[in-house]
Amino acid sequence: MSNLKGKVAVVTGGTGGIGKGIALQLAARGATVVISGRNATKAEAVLKDIRKSGAIGHFISGDVRSKSDMDALAAETARLFGGVDIIVANAGGNDDEARAPEVRGPFAKIDLARVAGVVAENTVAKLFPVQAVLPYMKSHGGGSVVFVTSEGGRVPTPGQTAVSTFAGGLIRASKVIAKELARDKIRVNCVCVTVVRDSPSWDAVFGEDSKVTEHHRKQYEKIVEACPLGVAAPPDIGQVVAFLASDESSYLTGATLSPTGGLTIH
Image (cartoon, rainbow, N blue to C red):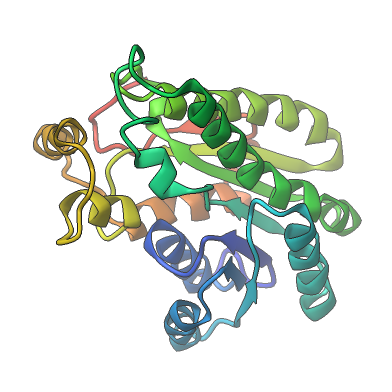
């Protein structure tokens, strides 16, 4: 598989979980992969795996909630590797805050000011890196944008007012952006995920230090039991993203894919 050979990809939140799975799948197909995050130690383990595949990997630290950090990420990637062809906006905002019972819980009881803060943080966390790379994609003659967000933006789930608001909004925004950027040969697509093994969300629910509510845990347990094709692992999501990043999907833009193992059907 070398359908991304010669391409330069940026993956936010690429130091672990779903982002790591995406980065490794892009690298396996020949892309040069820049992973961004805030933990250089975790990044080094991912880079070692990228290099084992024979691909080039690089880490640039940055906070997706900071426009200046994302502008610097795009500029440094272009300086080092000549441009940007693929951006995977995977990292979110403050996950611990998003899981707090005052944010994730019955609508009648949640703190709407805190919900609004989570919605804003998670939205800019996806949009800042994409906006930052656009000049470099345009100068390259096009590119592929992939947003990774929650299936809660497509399927109403009790207790997920915040998730539904920011993920649902991002899905709609991705279609607007796809319309705007089509003339520049930049494709924009969304991947919506539910429960994924070996991810921070999985560990937050099923790990030894779990602090989520009993309702939250029961929702996850129900999903695990109900997935007809089983629960996804990060590489499963990475394969879908790699397809959207490649020329094999060159006529696909404005789409939303839900690799949920048959749990949801659209």
